[in-house]
Amino acid sequence: GVGCGCLGGSLGCVLTLGASPAVTELLSTAAATEHFTVLVAEGRCDGSGHTTAAALAGVAPVVMIEPGAAARCMPFVQLVLCAAHAVGEDGGAICDIGALTLAHVAAAHRVPFCVAAPHYTFRRAGTPGAEELAPPLPPLP
Image 1 (cartoon, one colour):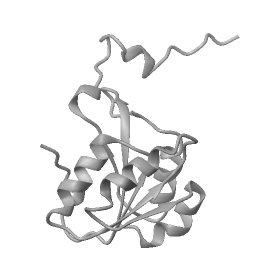
Image 2 (spheres, helix red, strand yellow; image 1 turned 90 degrees about the horizontal axis):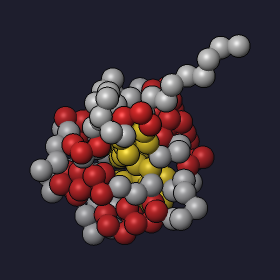
Image 3 (cartoon, helix red, strand yellow; image 1 turned 180 degrees about the horizontal axis):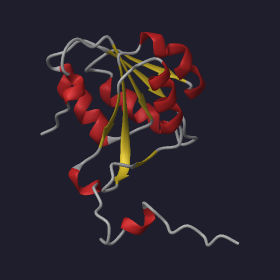
């Protein structure tokens, strides 16, 4: 099952970025008990955000926005929810391009920023694939 403490209570508007099965499942599950609108910021040239919008269209009202409009929409947003491709042992997450900007804008507006990630994306130091989370720094001259 999918669950997140961030989705408790009354939600008016949730902002997400691109496409992710984890985010889509989380929002679909939350829509069974909560009423909210989803803003999907499309930041990729492949149109992956439209996949999320199509999947959620029958579940909640969905509005597509340009990533640059996220800051303008943030005063109306109660939660920003992004997906992570990988989550490091220290809590650092590798997300889609634009997620860090959304995190900064959300912080400036005091809007909670949550990351949805399936359990298999969590990486421990020393495991295969973990080196991509924290590449070694180049030596100083």
